[in-house]
Structure formats: structure tokens, C-alpha cells
Amino acid sequence: QVQLVESGGGLVQPGGSLRLSCAASGSIVSIYAMGWYRQAPGKQRELVATITSGSRTNYADSVKGRFTISRDNANNTVYLQMNNLKPEDTAVYYCNADLVGGVRPYRGAYWGQGTQVTVSS
Image (cartoon, rainbow, N blue to C red):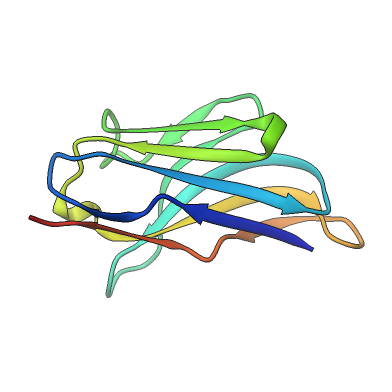
């Protein structure tokens, strides 16, 4: 079994900051890219940021310059530092990992359960 567990969501005022964490655990052989996606009410899930095993990053235009993704390969953890948050950043944030794992290891996309981020005054 492979699990991705997110933490760090919450309520923050516009202009504030939050740091999300996602730890992958279980029968993991190797992890390739990791990333964060978000889904606002009534909207489709969208990419926020991704990071490869070599730390190459990619960001949605809407978060460039405000969000920073990073990872700790030794602990199978990915982070999302979110600064200067805006009301339009309100969404459920999901962690994603492209990894080889499981009881009978195979490569696939794994998802966390999501963590709510609300930006409001």
C-alpha cells in the first residue's frame, strides 16, 4: 500500500502565507515527479506546481512568484510554500506523486486526500 498524506491547510487572510506538506509512505520503490493540484468549488482540478526527482520545477502562471514547491527525497516529502495568498487561491489542494510502489510494484499516479485552503478576510 502507498499513502500520500497532506497537512498544513487552513484559513488565512489575503496576503498571508501557508505551507503545505505531503508525505508519501508505504511500499515505495522510487518516486519520480511530485506535485500539487487544486480544485475550487464548481471548477475542474488544475495543476499548481510540479517538481521532478532532479528538482526541476513547473508552476501555473497564476501562482508564479508567489508559490514555491520543494521536496525532500530522503523523506519522500513535497512542500508547497504559498505566499501573498489571494481569495482566488481558495480550494482543496491535492498532492500527487508519480511513483513505483505497492505490494506488486507498478508505476502509477497516486493522490492524497486533499487539504482545504481558504483565503478570506
